Image (tube, rainbow, N blue to C red; front, side, top):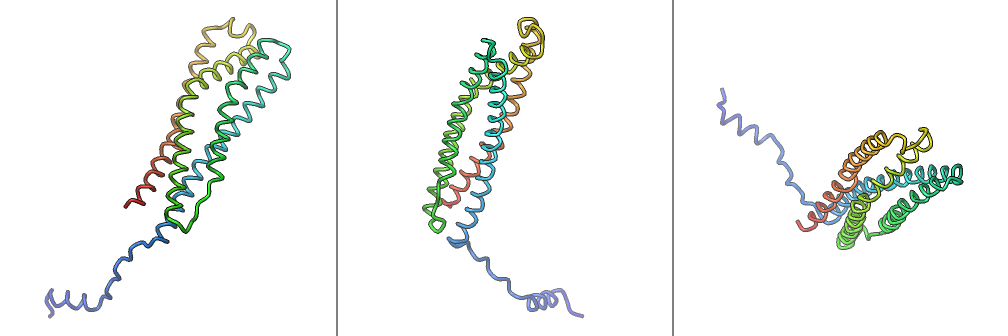
Length: 205
């Protein structure tokens, strides 16, 4: 009866030698990185389209207020103020995302891919920095405008008749906006920026 050593020797002889792992060449590495970059671009541009659609809805509502209630000076001022607050954010977003959308890279050149990713990350950082600062003004103002408009249109006496209720509504709306923005920032900016930085570090490895 064969002993354990004999069985082990027989097993080793019968098994084919495993091929050594083949290291990634430049073409394979570039392909992997392009795939990861495409995924991040899809995530980044989902924010753009969702936010742009939301802005269009807001502009449509403000336009409705101006057209239907523009004879009222207070309503007209609120509508114009809403446009004044939103337009700079929309304009900067369109400009920055256009820069990101038109950027091209030479897919055969590692240096070109690295430059492309670095530029995309820098553009995203610039917009994210602007977004965080601008929203400190945008959120309180647009929330206040929304509350005043809703109370003026649907509640007799408006904000002046129910200041306590208006204040509570403003606080709740602002809190909901802040929580939504925090989740939005994690999903569309913090994580993609971390991933882009990881891709850049892969080139150093």
